Image (cartoon, rainbow, N blue to C red; front, side, top):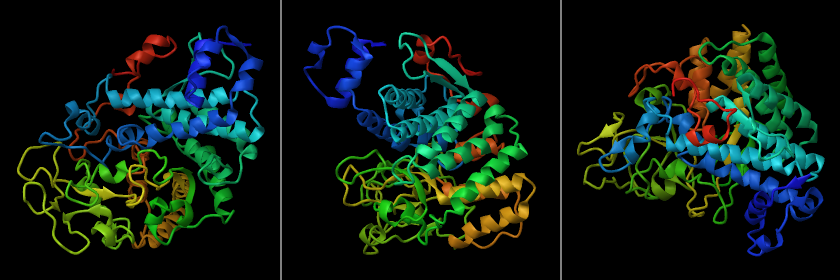
Length: 501
């Protein structure tokens, strides 16, 4: 087997930042020569770090999963946050085939798939191979979720040939088969690396969404698939490794790697040293005159906010190390805002900094800086600078419980499902529900996982994604998928544009 020298140079430079490698690459390298200079660990670590941009940045997969829903919108505020309407069109479902954020996300996710696959070509150990295959499966799940088409090569395939494309159910079946094949070779932890329970959660998500991936307009839920969800949930629950956190926001805190009892798989961020853009979760929503001075952008919708009971800590709670430092509470920020000394804050126009429930996609009035309810899901790291220490949360124990509850509900076992939902609600300070419908189930998932990047997938599975809501009319079925970027179509004849674009 030979490796193209330009391709190999790209890998080597990215891994080792050498300046004199090009001179030594006069000919194609053999597999044995390549294996001598390429570190499998470096490739796998590159795949881990590759997760940071597309998942943690406010303009990538998170935007695709949240701005398109009832949980988030990015209004234009006078001259601020216009960006040629790139945020607005996500919320009102009028994005076009050349939407830059969606195209960048697609490409960056595929780069992780490529990096993880490449690690498999250089003699990894069983655990290294399992980690690479898990990361690849997780990212392929995201691509299939958003675009329904996943370009894919097996290790060692000729890079000059266009990759094959796995579509819809075929892609999901691959994710399932990979997780099952590697689970025994994955370690038990830590939570910031691929692990056995992370594979179980991904399997749960794959089986729960299987009918939706097959037909997003009319999802189905086979009894056998729901039983798979329940089985994997029980394996995690019965391990007694996890519990619902006494403090909900500890799951997202700067030291969540030490204090969370819920997190199953996270993306590691090292405070002050190296991280993704997890700080965007508070910068994108805080006003310029708060601490820290934010970007005064994103908000949530009043209908969504009003779905919470006042006693629910997921709605509002003081958080040590944040509220006493800045006056900012965790959860939702609405009404007059204060600093840590109780002094009322003002906006830049001299108005009271009192966030309003009302918000439009285009704000032009004197109050344009204060419209919209703001969201603080990740407690602010005041010590990390640009590199915040909050590890990014992918999978939590609460999701295991609520996915099991949903599978039970869809299996005509509403009683046991209600017990689980009320277990979660009680921990969060909400009152018990007396009954449980699918609408109740969707609403509870919204309250538990808001701004965590799952809402679009949930709305599609529950048949609510296309419905009219605040600042958005009814949308057509083409919006159930994102467009394939033109550049990807140009280089891969196995891809085809999704309907409606």
